[in-house]
Length: 371
Ligand SMILES: *[C@@H]1O[C@H](CO)[C@@H](O)[C@H](O)[C@H]1NC(C)=O
Ligand SMILES: *[C@@H]1O[C@H](CO)[C@@H](O)[C@H](O)[C@H]1NC(C)=O
Image (cartoon, rainbow, N blue to C red; front, side):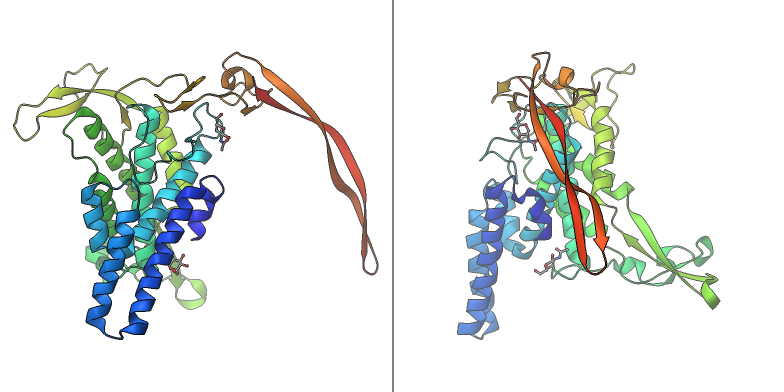
């Protein structure tokens, strides 16, 4: 639930729904065991609960609802992953004209992202796919999900490799990232049933998001041996910080590649995406690339059709020449200056014993907001 907090104050609907979901699920289960005390009946009531939950989650496709019913315990983790992705998106884009905010009621928790096939949509899909894989993996290793745990392959010595190739043994709990990645692939990619260019774009970006997570996986080790001589090491795989995944995808966003659909030769792949500007014809984007179909609007004005909220009222930085500078952020419309007095405690002295006295300091301060 901690992970939900980031989104909590921005999107009360999203976390509200999840809280209700979790509450519903736990209470159905508790009620059942209390009244029936019979495992068979319990599972059918839990299944009923799962139906109830899965029918209430907004924005799921029929295929996702089916997966939800078969894995109701995972759906809370999916929700955590989606909120993790939302807060990271807000952080990464806080200085951009498009700041990853959505009008209330249209936040794309599970549902489609209301943006034309732009770079921003590419980022959203990638970070959401990574977020779900991340949260599922985390839930697995903390024992919160029934069908996964630690990575079993990395339990035996050598971890599948010949011992001579590595100077440590796997031990402890290596997170099972393959399980998380697979779950994200099955659940998130299940949305993309249309065989059109937008679906291909979404699928590519989902995969790029998961690849970013996979490539950033890290290893923690512990030394053994006489007084920490480290003659023997035990290591386990850990998840990277989600911030580092966001930063990596942000670099990909800045170098996103435009693609266009072309007809495939084989019946199984009626269309595929190729890079729009490439010397070699039919060159495909790389797996790690974020790809987009359409150029982004400038996000200066409010336009619900493109998902642009405009930048009126946004706080800008008068001295910055970057995207958060008043010139760029306000699209040349100019900005308002608000002056106020900032007051704080200063020159605090500690008197023995035990009193602290401070003075009040104040300073004229300014903020700037876009016209
Ligand atoms: C596991 O479940 C507990 C109790 O529901 C929760 O507090 C915790 O945050 C969960 N951990 C993860 C990683 O999801
Ligand atoms: C993002 O921009 C919108 C529209 O200008 C604004 O209403 C909102 O407060 C901003 N959100 C954040 C988190 O800065």
